[in-house]
Image (cartoon, rainbow, N blue to C red; front, side, top):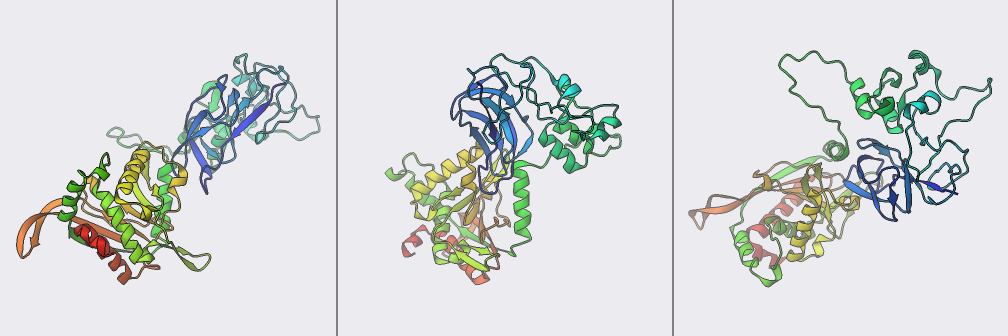
Length: 442
């Protein structure tokens, strides 16, 4: 007989609680193979493609693109024995099966408020022969039994029962919206996320000069970034110091190294020099590569550098990490940076690559900005802003000359890093960039 399993949203990264459905790669009736990508979701960390662990036929998709789904919630149902009999499938929970009553083959399982009776008839539509799925109507109750669904909404609308999937019901509850007051805009009168959000917005006065505003829900990477920055700003006492340096020698060395065999095919950017300098300077001032453990009442010093690189992507700011960056040579760092930024801009960074950093660089110079006052990533002690490299007047051996000049800004957590330590670290980074030959003395 057929065997039905539900594919659940798993925790793809430590601390994940929910994800937004970006797009489905399959639809009901499609055959799937083991490890086939079936859906792309956006978590608080990144966009992630999810493979399915079984082969079979998709019988039902349980969330729509744009829905936010909690970890552990079912995403789709699969018949893993499509060649079985047409007997009723089991009600799948966490990938297991249990017997369930038979039902007409033309009805689908419908995880909606008010499924069954009139609500079921409103959503009934022909099914593909390859994937019969029963209705999930509740069994009939004796006259004295309690009602199976709240009577108030139905009474309020003359027997109307609102149709809405679990994530939409949760959104309505969070926003204080009564689903019985909404007429769904989707096929069969199903209430969508947009219907709920529209009902939650207060009525606006008629525009006098045309619509000149857009409202976009705060979610995904933007929501996570905002929460992290607020937490950091109001938890870690920030201090920011600045340093302007002449990096002409570094830029000249870069031109020479680009012709060296060890750098063949390597995209050698000034940021690679900054990454190497930060790793070397952190060895001399380990306080900037530590974390504050409030619960344990301890400072945790790291004998490794997991270097975060802030990257702007179409979905917002992300900070993927280069693991053990301190153990890499300059060519290896350059290659790792190129791969990291390319993957981040494509939205393909694995969530595991965006946690447990120890110190971060934000390259504001790529936007032509001189410097800034960056906010420390939660769990870290410092962040370095790397500004634009520009031609500027500079005094060299008592003579005014045009040189390649760079501004650095270091924000650090004053609980962990005193002014002396922060200044020493920033001066070391500056010295290595102004005169790369200094590295031989470290």
